[in-house]
Image 1: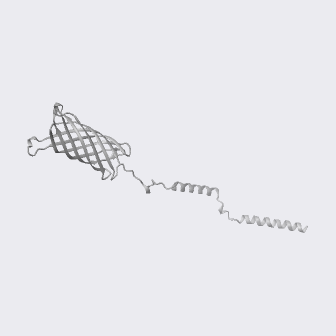
Image 2 (image 1 turned 180 degrees about the horizontal axis):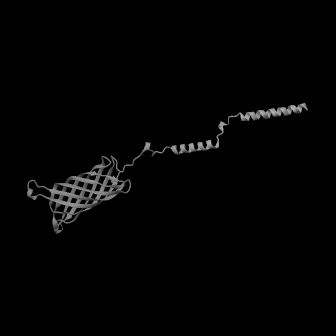
Image 3 (image 1 turned 90 degrees about the horizontal axis):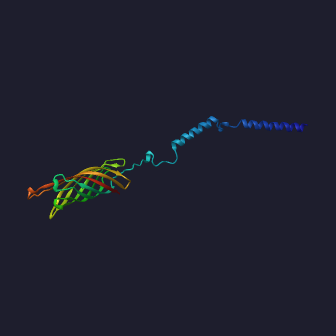
Length: 224
């Protein structure tokens, strides 16, 4: 009987010690529901702030695409009809083809050279021909994919009519237009020009003359 009583007392002591040990544990490590919700909200905010991997297009790594940058180059081919103004019926509507090269000094200013060939029929089924060789300055403002070149060409020209050749003559042409940038390498557009070609004979000033021609061109540019 005494042994059984000892066993019961011992069991009660063990149970008491186990309960005491359980209640003495630090329950602060077990978060409550409110603490869990707050922790999840804070983690969500951190994730939204940090995001995934750093984006190379963040403000710190801004990359601006320039349609035309210093050092960019282009080749320009134009086809245009010419409308002589000051020779009446003696000089009829003709045409001209030009091939030009340009290089950008800034995002909006380019310098280059140009070679052309033009002609105008005259009375008696004859033809006036001219070959202009010029340098050009092009101011090129742009809005998105649209470019608005303003160009001045100055140089010399060789003209021929029948057996008469005049070289060198002065050639000045100015104009403006609109091009559409199809892709990185190609653009196309139209331009309007006004050409002035004088012929000055210093020994025979009475023979001095000049030609004035407006023209409208369709052109293609290859950018590289």
